[in-house]
Image (tube, rainbow, N blue to C red; front, side, top):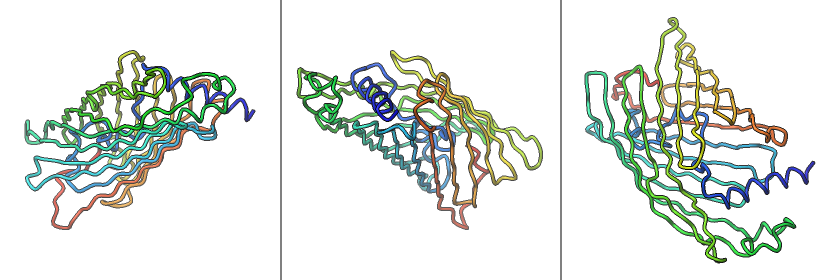
Length: 310
């Protein structure tokens, strides 16, 4: 069984390295609580200085399973119409690593008393590394020249844009976080890996009052990548007594899962999500775990216009 698990992982990692038309941006189950990961226009929306950390472990139990560590920072500037932020993402699949650092900027345009449109732009770089020589431990790769050297470790720039329309009860988000499609060259036969493909994200959600102590929030997110199947996420979450979020999600062709978040106070939130894989990999791994923590610097003199549900 251990050999079978290793062979399965090896196949996945090699296909990820060799296929240029794969969806490669990290995915999150708790995206709805921090859209900054895909949309720069989201920064400043919290109306406070905010920090978010997400740790995602996919296909736990499979050797070299994908992991994603994300740190986000955002703050409005004094005018409250401008927001700035920072995203740091470390994404690993086996021996493949991507370290992305980006800076976000948004400007808010008031459309009415309760509705605003944020325009966002981001810029940053990705450091990509892939130690192909380590794959020679698998017999089928020992005679393949592709696996006789490593892909060059490079810093590649990128830019992105986004729109975020919101009111206290709904939001719509449209973004293209990476406009430039970067490639990484190896030292063997001009082999290359298109490591960054354009992803278009479209998301939305609404809030409904079911009772004095129960609120309902359905949301969706679609992801479109050239050469890859159209993908969508659907989620339904309930807010209980303004303290606990509980709900579930479905990701097309991939998984379904459970989501929970504890609003400890106005500053601190803790979240957890568990995904059940629906693909053939379900027989070789123990699910997907995702932990989120967010902290907001809320001062006594700071007035929040309305509770934040997105």
